[in-house]
Image: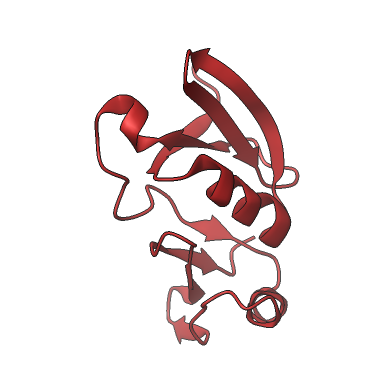
Length: 121
């Protein structure tokens, strides 16, 4: 029986730029970088200790445009520290917002998409 979500895909314009962002800026590990077929790569990045990976697929390899939004949200253990670290790295990030259901920030990636990071990590 299915036991977990293994990966989620994000169609991007440039796999190298996005992999660098996730690995060098966000602290993910590049867990797979392999040819799928001539000219197409499977680039997979994974947060530390995570069970679910993010596959950065080059949209053009599948005859489509890059995704306009993320198919998932991220969580962290310390929202203030994450906000401070991303701000110091020059990453566009909103100020933390708090609501009855939790707190979050929005982060903009190098291709202009926003994703949410909440404090549920």
